[in-house]
Amino acid sequence: MTPSSQNPRRIYGDYTYSRAPIDSCYWAEAIPEAALAHPPARGRITTRIAVVGGGYTGLNAALALAESRAEVTLLDAEFPGFGASGRNGGFCCLGSHRASDAQLRKFGKDGPGEVHRAEAAAIAHVEALIGRFGIDVDRHSQGETVMAHSPRAMEALRRKAPALSRDFNAEVRLIERADLAAEGLYSPLWHGAMHMPLGFALHPRKYLAGLVQAAEHAGAVIHGGSPVLSVSHTGKRHLLRTPDAEIEAERVIFATNGYTAETLLPWLRGRFLPAQSSVLTTRRMTQTELEAQSYTSRQMSYEDRRMLHYFHLTPDGRMVFGQRGALLSSPRNEARVAARVRADFDAAFPAWSHVETPHHWSGMVCLTASLTPYCGPVPGMDGVFAGFGYHGNGVAMASYCGAMLADLALGQPTRALLPKAFAAPPPRFPLGRFRRAFLMAEYASARLLDR
Image (cartoon, rainbow, N blue to C red; front, side):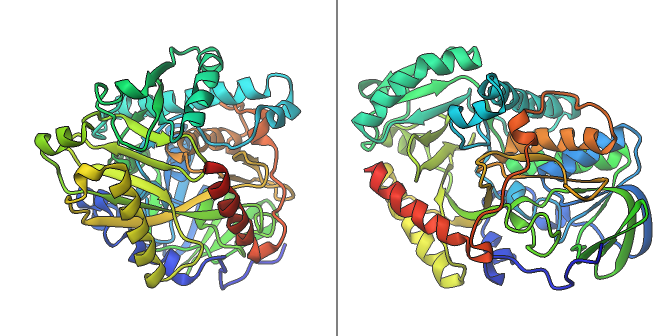
């Protein structure tokens, strides 16, 4: 196999992959870049397993490998958590796919059930890590609440609730519009809600920093500032080149998700579609301000529509509010999207229209054409594995898949259920590097359907 390109290419402009979109990330106040920075890899390095990418997938893989006493070296292009893992909305929740039950049944009659069980297990996996390592993640929210943006959406939630209760063996509770204020969840936009008692909200960088510490304590070696520029294969070994090092490894795990370079591996090209998501955070609000809006709950919530908003109050009274971002990448577009997010925030919470929002940032979620994550070997490359495509719900599922990838790299059965749907390689999107056109079409149709 010949080396991949020395000049990585991505489908968005350079601005998207720079530090600029996270200059004002609220999570960095508690865990700044300096707390996550690691020295770059230098010289010739030999390791049993190399992990490329220092987000939740890569860190969970590195931690599991190190705890199995495997020699592991993790490489991140910037610093651990630079990508989605250090800038997401803080939802440890169900989700990870957008496939229908009919699509999941292509992998067997129990296809949907396998995915449901894995999603619940992914939440439990994160919860167990937080407890085992004593990571203070500012945990809050008892499950998550789905808000109905229209009467028709509320009727749909009423129909869904019994099936969700059965599928997840959980007590799903409906909240009628008249009861939203009493629940501390009021907005003039919503027509009711549905509460699912699985999942919790957290501070994403505090969780990430805990994973870094746990992985290093277990024996993993972590390098920042080490973008992998090429991958080649000789005999039974893989050679990864960074600007300052050559890393030789028996096995390799690629965990770069929506920040993957098109030219990193030929097989990966076109099998993932990054989509931008934008988030703002208010200043800390007083109890009087919270009560003025009749929104005092710390529940993590989102709207039951395709172009959804997601939000939750932090323990100290800041509202984190996010939505889908732009299709273009530039400072001007970032400012335009920030204004749109703020306008949507004001519409949802009119009593807070005077409240400042000093923090705004954006990042990339990752979609696949199969509408499911992928967690498994890279076809045609013995000893190479990849995990990606969590569809905007990666806190739990990326963590879970990282641990599964560690087992696969060690050649042993996965420690927990890996759904057949997640083990099936996703097809390529048509249009190659121009596949963002699919997002344009989806956004247009979603706006029509969400009406």
